[in-house]
Image 1: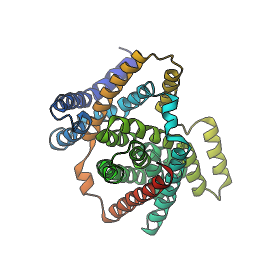
Image 2 (image 1 turned 90 degrees about the vertical axis):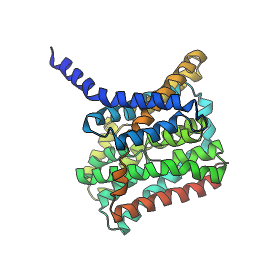
Image 3 (image 1 turned 30 degrees about the horizontal axis):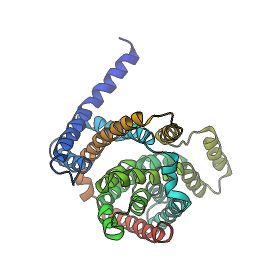
Length: 343
């Protein structure tokens, strides 16, 4: 047996236990949703996953499969989602929607760095928190860390706090948007897609409201992800503004494509363009929608399975204050900007 074949077999065997659990939770959720249709399979998958993951199946053997189900399957789902949306649908957010995202991200970046400095956190840690909260959670932190020379400890703590903040907001925002906007699709989607940290959290939170909100929230989120390269470069520039050699290296890295927009964003726009040009037929689009929805529910089950309630409880006082302050800032700025820009 070749080394490559052995490596592939091991990778599959590592993923399989967690994937099977995620799939089973998703299937049970879809079955239960037939009896509680007002709650929906997506919401059931998250809560059931949290229960199973924290009470029964949180062992290490499942973690790689949970991560695969959350990240990889969700990425495939996003690409397939593009095959169900036309360019005209994406343009529904308009210039005002894009301006909302740019201003919301800018306020988040500046505010998170300022709060971090006031609370006495290191510059590197504040930059990682700013990147993670402004763009796309762990992925943005991973892209920013090498550019600002952050160590693994700073990176690990930032990932934990950003994810904990996102999990809390994931459940809070549907309640808040119901109160503020009566679940108006564009305004609700703007808040969910403009605030939440990870792609999975956006899908989960949007799905708690409606299918239309989930899809439009993803459009707002994708606009944020497109600006990842700009945010990483800006934070690197702030950190190394007095060192011309390092700044030149950062420019070179961007030109060489070392700091990349995630592949699924490119895939989303390709399938969206193919659907808009009628190369993807309505029948294929419907099939893509069905597959995308099933993959989403598996991914949402995995998100629930990976939520560690102990982590939520064990955050230190300073970290908790930081997380609450950042979440509050994002919500207040989003409410003001949505009132001004999104009708």
